[in-house]
Amino acid sequence: MRKKDGFTLIELLVVIAIIALLMAILMPALQKVRKQAKSVICLANLKQWGLVLNFYADDNNGFFMAGAGNYFEWMEPAEPYYKSSDMRYCPMVGERKDVGQASWGDTFMLWESGDYTGSYGINEFLFNPPSGVQEQWGASTTMNWRTKNVKQASYIPAFADCLWVGGAPHHVDNPPDFEGEWSDSFGDNMKRFCLNRHNEAINVAMLDWSVQHVRLKRLWQMKWNREYDEAGPWTRAGGAMPENWPEWMRYLPD
Image 1: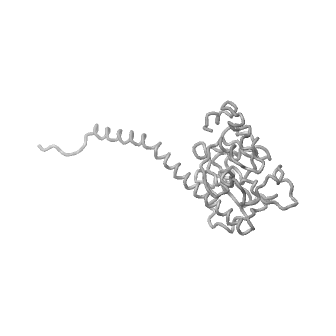
Image 2 (image 1 turned 90 degrees about the vertical axis):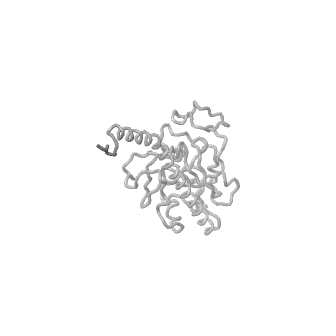
């Protein structure tokens, strides 16, 4: 009698086991590729935000929005310069329905301010407040850049991944004690930007309208305001050692 073609049960089990093994090997690589793709989309969004700021300044004699005393500090003035609200969202953050459901400080949570939500924040030292405003967010307005026409633009952050609509970092700001810790006060605003959102880094649009993938410790080496010391106490040049950092950041590269 002719033998029927087909697989035995053992052969099928072996094939299934091989497929499962290959999936186990490939899944981490696929997840890494997905995260890299999301990071590229995030960089593209921030590139667009750089252009929005540039266009706004061009229409206002080279100066940025006022920002003073207004939680819609950049969202409302910038609205005529972009069409899709999707630009306000990094692809790494949670679903928009999660706004307000997660605890403050969740690295992947969206912020919500009035009618606006998003996951990017502006460097609040960019703002150009009225001449009568001498202080903004606890700092002298002499520290503000105000205009796009400044030197060292490639070292000045403009927009970045952020836990709030923006922040005003100082070189003495402390790092987060744990992932996702943030500050709602005038102090330690660097915590709003120091997020493990893109593989121990965030994405940043600079004032020369370039975009960068910035390691977390390097945030303290950027020129956030006119009086910012890029060799401050949280940099290697300023004497910071690995053991000085919170445990979760201790072994991150400089």
